[in-house]
Image 1 (tube, rainbow, N blue to C red):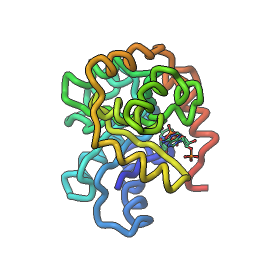
Image 2: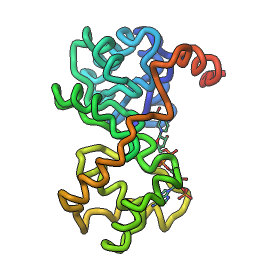
Image 3: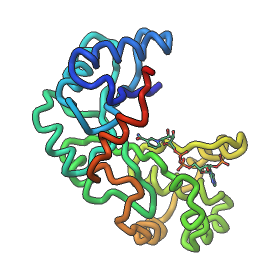
Image 4: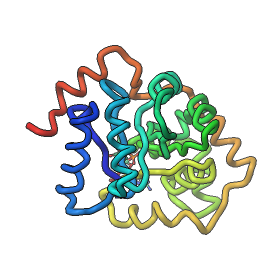
Length: 213
Ligand SMILES: NC(=O)c1ccc[n+]([C@@H]2O[C@H](COP(=O)([O-])OP(=O)(O)OC[C@H]3O[C@@H](n4cnc5c(N)ncnc54)[C@H](OP(=O)(O)O)[C@@H]3O)[C@@H](O)[C@H]2O)c1
């Protein structure tokens, strides 16, 4: 079970209440993984509240999300403890190579949101991927997820199709070769659809997503 703290609940006191609200809404006495959803506002205060809730056993693991290499270095510099994960946009067209170097310094795991490119057809139908679907008898999503798992990412695929949901976990009975891994690594464009450093993103999110209203 993962849940996240939204921007309206940032700052130490607000975050303490936000964590308790998450537990109450879920009807749980602890949450396995709890993330700071966005890298804006009083991140340090919110993180301190997460650390305390972890020490109290309310949160088993705590992490961050949407932190680029720059934001990760700036915002976590004063954290007393290292995040377990940074949950960021990541797929074969955007492999987060710079961030992975930063995270690996402290063995922080990368969790990939949009691991299937949010269903991007140009990714799912890329010839590098479709050639492998034939070889392994797997669909394009399974090939991409297998690549990501072999790269060491934690993946968060979503599907509304029961057959695909079952298939998306059925990726542990084959392994891509070193050459095949290299061919998918070569698809990286370095371009991302969501840039957390773009001016005004924090303000826009706070204005448009008011979770308590
Ligand atoms: N931390 C953050 O700020 C953040 C931001 C955005 C998203 N997320 C999270 O990321 C997760 C994934 O997001 P997402 O669903 O938008 O992106 P996604 O998992 O990359 O893509 C989902 C799309 O891929 C299709 N799909 C699923 N399995 C497939 C397969 N095996 N072959 C072909 N197509 C397949 C789905 O269609 P069907 O439904 O028709 O199968 C759907 O259109 C969500 O849980 C979301 O909450 C987090």
